[in-house]
Image 1 (spheres, rainbow, N blue to C red):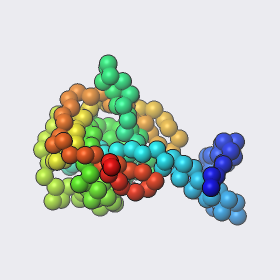
Image 2: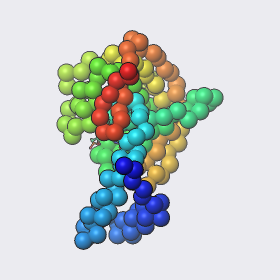
Image 3: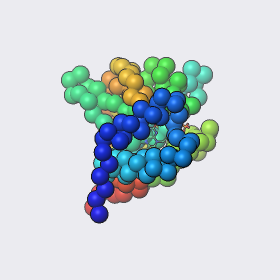
Length: 190
Ligand SMILES: Cc1cc2nc3c(=O)[nH]c(=O)nc-3n(C[C@H](O)[C@H](O)[C@H](O)COP(=O)(O)O)c2cc1C
């Protein structure tokens, strides 16, 4: 069965949320809003993506990483990529001020890595073997590909911040198949 959710309804919802400065409605309209949020998220989930971990270091040198599926290509010449991070992420300011960051593209064997870097654990790198990339950025091992970037631009994107990165160096991994994320689940290529 297909479900249709009108764009005006979505826009109304978004407007009413931002007017109230709320991430989620807290009134009796919440159930209807929740249904629309769910439908919107379900529809977005039909777009299958890969899974990456974005890594950088704090000014004090502590490695940080976060699981990101919003990675995509932007431009070949110059070589640009993009990804977006929630405004509520405690890592937001660290990435905003980073001189370098890396996109680590996960393989089908790394769904536990994806879960790990999506957790709220502070010491996410404990037990991980890493090597240093440009500017000392931590690169995870056994990935499908790595893109080491310098910040090119940042753009507001609603409740996310969109990062555009210039690829300074890239490498291909071990030829293993990539991890796929679709409809809220990890999958593998057939
Ligand atoms: C498969 C997957 C993809 C994700 N993609 C994104 C994303 O593109 N942008 C984002 O802000 N959060 C994304 N998240 C959520 C973050 O990984 C998660 O909220 C974050 O790691 C929580 O830690 P933090 O509070 O330190 O940010 C994703 C999570 C998973 C499991």
